[in-house]
Length: 150
Image 1 (cartoon, helix red, strand yellow):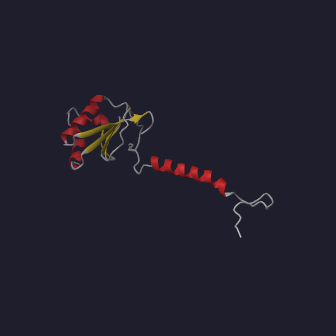
Image 2: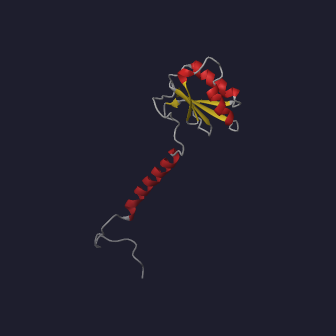
Image 3: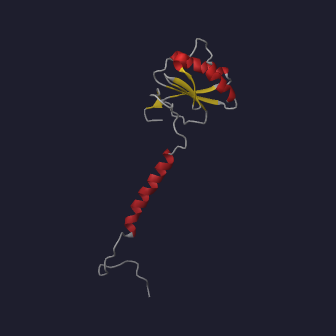
């Protein structure tokens, strides 16, 4: 005796969804999962603890790599999340000692990312870059915000 694979119109209707109705939902869930995994980041974007901070714009498409992070805002400078000096208190020397000392402790790292507020003057950024190079960290990346987002 053959098993019936298809039901006829004479059979009683069943409650619930048909198997054919689940396929589009499974497809959508798979797409959402792929999108979530593609956009997931285990690291939060570095942001100073307080105050406003706006990155400059960039057109680079390179992805971020692990690095020592220097945040430069109009209020202060942070090295790997620790506030080292208030920006208005930077002296006249080219070398910023408060930034230099923590960078010397990080000499094993090869890469440095400088996240600067869009309103920070170039003269301050130039001194931060010179201090970073003096500490022996020569692979420096200036990070900005792209039109598509970070």
